[in-house]
Image (cartoon, rainbow, N blue to C red; front, side):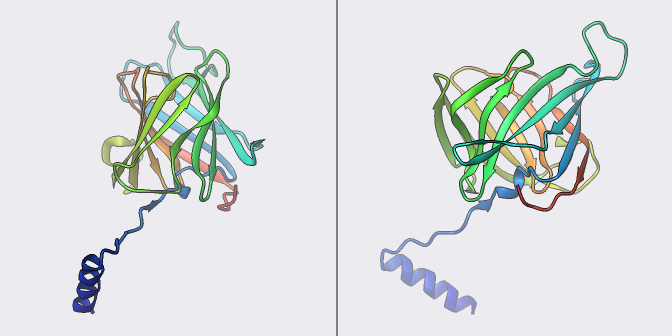
Length: 216
C-alpha cells in the first residue's frame, strides 16, 4: 500500500497534476449553539477583574447569515476605583457559516457599537497554516493569518489537554478589540485574547455550555 501511494504521487507529479491536501476544518472553532459563557483571567496580576463572556441566544440576520453577539463584562475581584462590576469591557458580533467561514460584523470597545460593512473575514471554513486573508472595512485594511494548531499549554488557565488554533488579525492601525491574536478550541470557542493594543493576555479560566447541539 505504501509503495502504491508513493507511486501514485510520483505519477501525479510527473504528469503535471497538482496533489492538494485538505486544510483544517475551522467551523467548530467558533460555536454559537446553546447557552454559552466563558470566564477569563488576565496574565497581568494587577488587573482587578475577571472577564465574563456571555453569548446572547437570539441572533440577528445580516445578508442571510445569523450574527451572534458575545458581550464581555468586568467581574471585579477587589475594591478598585477603576473597576465597576458589570461594566462592558467589549463586545463582538460574529457569524460562522459552513462553508462560508467566520466573520466579525461589528464590535463595541465599551463605548458604543461599531458596524463593519463589509464584515471582517476572520477565517475560511478550511484553512492551512499561514493562509492570509485580506479585508478592507471601515476604511482600514486588515489581514488575518491562520497560525496553525498546537497544544494550548499556558495559553489557558484551565487544566486540560486541548489543542489551540491561533489566528492573528493585523490592521493598518491597532483597533481594540479586533487586532491581535486569538486562540480558539473546537467546541469551545475563543480561549485566549492577546490584543495588539494591550500587553497582557486574557486566558480561559472556565466555561459553561448548556443545550449545545452543534446547530447555529
